[in-house]
Amino acid sequence: MYGNVRSASVYGIEAMLINVEADVSDGLPLFNMVGYLASEVKEAKDRVRTALKNSNFALRPKHITVNLSPADVRKAGTAFDLPIAMACLAASEILPQEKFDKMLIVGELGLDGKVNRISGVLPICIAAKEAGIDTVVVPKGNAKEGAVVSGIAVIGVETLNELIEYILEVRVLEPETGRIEEELKNTASQVHEDFSEIAGQEAARRAAEIAVCGQHNLLLSGPPGSGKTMIARRIPGIMPDMSFEDCLAVSKIYSVAGLLSDEQYLITRRPFRSPHHTCTVTSLVGGGVTPKPGEISLAANGVLFLDEMPEFGREAIEALRQPLEDRVVTVSRLNASYTYPAGFMLVASMNPCPCGHYPDRSRCTCSERQIRMYQRRISQPVMDRIDLCVNVSEIKYEELSTPKKGESSDAIRERVMRAREIQLERYKGMPISFNSELTGSMTVDFCPLGREEKELMEKAFEKYALSARGYHRLLKVSRTIADMAGEKDIKVPHILEALCYRNGDER
Image 1 (cartoon, one colour):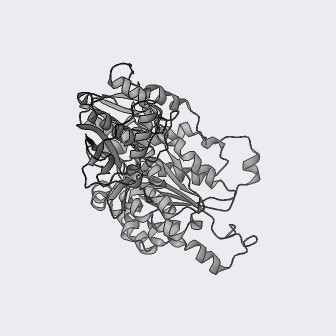
Image 2 (cartoon, helix red, strand yellow; image 1 turned 135 degrees about the horizontal axis):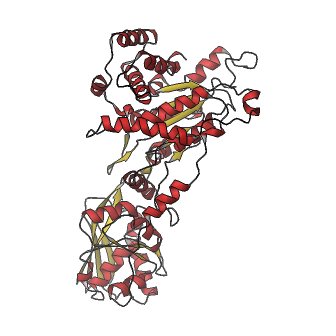
């Protein structure tokens, strides 16, 4: 007899529907699995057979063939255990086949019949909804995550027996209900680290605000203990709250990476990722034997903070070039290519020299060659992709001892939201949302310059030996500063301020 159950597998951050077919016939007792399978999928036959036996549904000694189609796509992961068990029971005429017509099933089985949680349930539920499937059966630990998707019934099961009784209509299992509004409300009430806690550093605070307004990349340079990390960690607090669509997009990435839990089933806060400088290229960009999103994808719609950027491996730093430009990263492997989003805001920090005290020659012990070699660990092509560079000076005693607090993150966020609203209105109906996303041709259209402004840009281009990319990024930052000032056109003061943040060109 024949049984067919629909399941799904995740490729990149999208899911593809997979048909799990089972045929049970007379012949030499054998459990054979085909369909371009990874080793963990092939091992499913032993988990399924033992789980069914321990759930009092032992398979008869028959010739069992299981096929996962389409057969030209590689299947990996343990999410096929539960649908394979259901297909075998349907083929053995223990369960009615018609019950599976509008159902999709995923889940890993333990030998005792317990259904274990898996990764990637959110994109699977989205794919099921798009395919017109009514019900998705997932492990109980993934039920809240799947219920984020409206329009489908997400059933969480804890054991194999639970699902069998549900199919036979012996047990009633209520669909998991989403608590999205409650989750978003809890996020709004959470307290962020506040900019008011930072003493002094007006220039760095201003640069951070400009960077957030236009989604520009930022480099903070200064001696140890000057507040670079404090400023970086407070940047998500001045970003506008994410929309539900943004939350869903980020949560898909975290779901595939296996970072969602029963307590945190929806990412509602701007991500802040701060990998250690010993991280590998694969952990930063993504990939691996079983491809997973890297840090740059986990930072999508948020901040990727590289503390002490020159200490990162050169290969890791250079690997940022293409994602910073294209806002996606493509990981190519022999079997397939996977595309992950990389729409993050890069914030990096560095010391000006190995000891950290240059240009204070009374304290700096580094030679000119050491300073030059240290700064050149970040190549010019990478520096070209960083829009704002700002020096963070040492804090004076008076600034630390004065109880006066600086401007709060809430006040800064209000200005950021006004600047972003201007950009959203300007780029309405276009595939971009921020000034930093302007292409070369768009820069000409949206950053027109008057006669004085053109003369100033020409002098800056020659003095700083700007590349074409550097020239356009200077214009984009000027456009953002003009938006913050409520100006329709870019003026000379806006360009001059943007030039102040190009000190990375004269390292």
